Image (cartoon, rainbow, N blue to C red):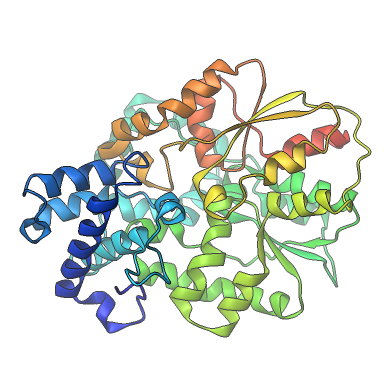
Length: 417
């Protein structure tokens, strides 16, 4: 099967149809992923409607399955037929290929064009952030956003940061001529959750780890890929690799402050670009929680904590899990004496831009129900998630925004006072 957008076969519609039918036949016979996301029940229903004959599947049926895939990657983790198995099955990349071919043929929708460029909306929103945040609470504005941009008016949206993370970095005069690590701040931290970046810098500095924050990085490209905009994602990947490759060459670790961005740098950049530089950047990239957990396990992280969060209810996001980091946050936070970490291993149902769209909002809420129920039941504990987008669902369920593990660690050190 073709998963490489740099190869001509990737864009061949007839080959796509053949590959999708082969994949659907494999999935229908296996069904290990029956409860992971809406794609698989839709797939099984479609195949069963033709008495299990995948050759009779219609274009609309296959497109529907592809559009319900929100790229959580969990089926890839669970699938017994992924490469190097002879079936060579990578279901998420195949569904992305379907979207990419349709986007190349018909162009981006208004929704995907807007959501695929978080830098543009972030820059606009942080020009007068108090006004932007106020407007997002107004029903008239939200109805217009739903009508024009396809963003559901009921969706709890992230607030814009009063000070961009990059502006805060400049105000702190954070410079390192020979840094130990490089921060990939991400659009989420830059424009919405600057406190995550500030906490990361504080913890690293407290532990004698010098960090540099490049001021010319771009979006990782995931939102563009969500809409099938491979060219847009590739352009962003090329820019970021050009800015990060010298650090990777020098053996510096690149710390991504959001799990999705870490996954994209690790897994998608080598495929999108196919260069040695992209592979070196991928190999140098770590999720910030992953890196700090390694430091904690090896005894290189200070334990001069002045308080404990007590019981933490931690949401294991899909893209954290897809990186194999199921225990990273637990290992990190459990290093604080008196701390218990309870893991909620359930999808938040937002998954990039998918859960923001009006057409998928109700489905998103169904996907998230087990997670939101868990946080409602744990209202007297500290809510935590690495993923700020998942935090939108958690905030509604628990009536307060969850903290990133680095923010909890900062409080435990007493550095937030």
